[in-house]
Image (cartoon, rainbow, N blue to C red; front, side):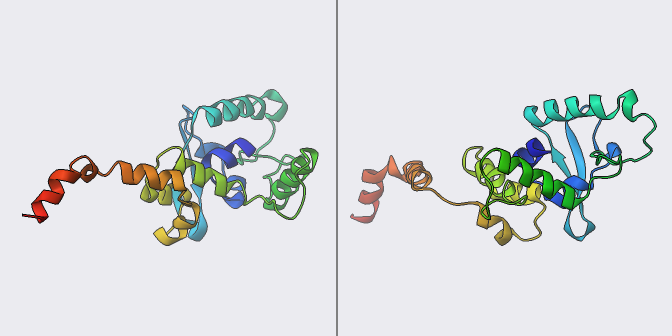
Length: 173
């Protein structure tokens, strides 16, 4: 669950709502239902595919063969895991990692996932909007912190920089 949070930027309700049938057979993607009951496809990277593959081996083992629940993630009672249970698990592991406190929540992994995709993965903000399931681009822009280094690279990449002298002569004739 944590791997999906960190790599896909899902909401906790989206994670808890995933069914076994929402996962494609090649583990390339899964379907989630976001806000407003809007479905979207979330593509999985290698880390997610590996973690989900391991989990599915356990989830579909004989130990769970009698479980009728279609949910991907199950509680200890073999029922769909609730949002509150996911929250409790995340808080438990944050505490074990020495990261407990009011600055962390189940929504927090969504922020670095989006920011890292944008800054390090060079993901276009419009693509990021669709990945996160946002309706409006301005909602996505809160995740797109622009660093000084990014701004320097953008200015240096301007093609007019190479022709500066020639460009100036066009206006000083």
